[in-house]
Length: 86
Image (cartoon, rainbow, N blue to C red; front, side, top):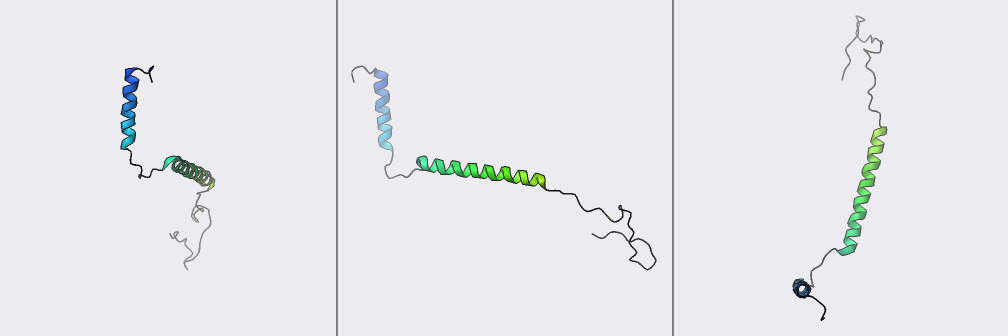
């Protein structure tokens, strides 16, 4: 390696020593782990988007009260309207 500069040679020796420090018995997730994680993240994103779309379609209007609709209930014997329960 005659055409390498001194700084490049020094950098290569430092990288080589760092590579020797890596434990070869150590398990890392690698590319497959990243792909699985990315697929799960995309699935969660798609499910959240779908849920948001479906929740937008839900109608949260309550049924109208009997008092406001003009209907009178005659549950009491006197014929007066009774208050709505609930």
